[in-house]
Length: 452
Image (cartoon, rainbow, N blue to C red; front, side, top):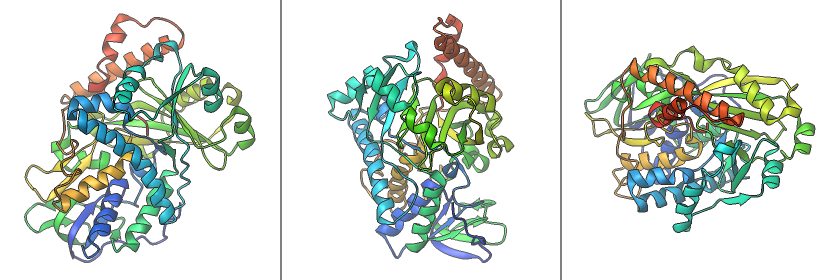
């Protein structure tokens, strides 16, 4: 991605209508929405590093929807709102594609859909209750493929069952976020990088302290994703930080095309700690796996800024999916931090002690497409609009809390290891132990990992 040699750093005190803390997808979509609706509004974005250097630039680039979460959303928000959110999440994919075309953002976005699969017998049939519910509301974009078509489309004989939806895309995540920064600046948003928030005073005007200057703002949006818990203890138990680890090959288009990997569709299996993979336009193959490292006390340490600690696990999974590529070396590996909420869905609201400071987090590893909706929600809250987004079911704050430490981390490790044993047994065609099956049921409480 193209990064300016001299990022703009805030060095003088400023006043602004809205200050957005965090220059990733959520922050930039919010800023863009605000300026599109009210061009005269003064909007500032600050980021402690470069825009996109957090989760937005280091994910797997799978742009997916909430359709597979319909049953969970129905329980949380009611049937009507769940239907609306499924539709909105699917429409977001097409709207992001149109936005990139309109503003000429080259993010390698390929609107080729997604394939949701079962890779062992135990995973088969898991989509049936969801698809039946979607069918009843005529919002089912999924179609079942025959096993031969699944294996051809996924480029792997490991898949036993598969469902395809056109409402999905793949994207180069860092190129997308840098493109959004460029658009925001063209719309008049002032973006300051290498400008971390050191402190915030919630009195009016809200004062944000940075290393060299202060920002006096009428309203503030906190778009910090997994980094939210570092500054705001009230969210310490609202999310759990879990890694998604990824690996990518050098360009090998001559090897991928005969396997059937010719386009940009994403492939996701249906285990608890999912595998996901996709190709790139230059013929690389990226594979990721969620649910590996759980951060104790939600501290973001060096693990999230280094090559993956789980390269052997990635290599094992890669070889199982693609035995014909087992001698293919990885060009690099990396780790992304996912802020998993109790529900697996994001939540929005205002801070308890300030109605002028808004937040959104908890995308649970599925935020590449859903941050488009996050931007609509947060801009509606900032502008005090009474609309479908400000009244959205997601605007309810956290829907639950994880246990305090050390119980949360200890429990997460027990559940994670039980899930690994359970799924290893299922992959081998064996029956998991009763104990591991029971522990695996606590996956939602321990932090089930979704797609990055």
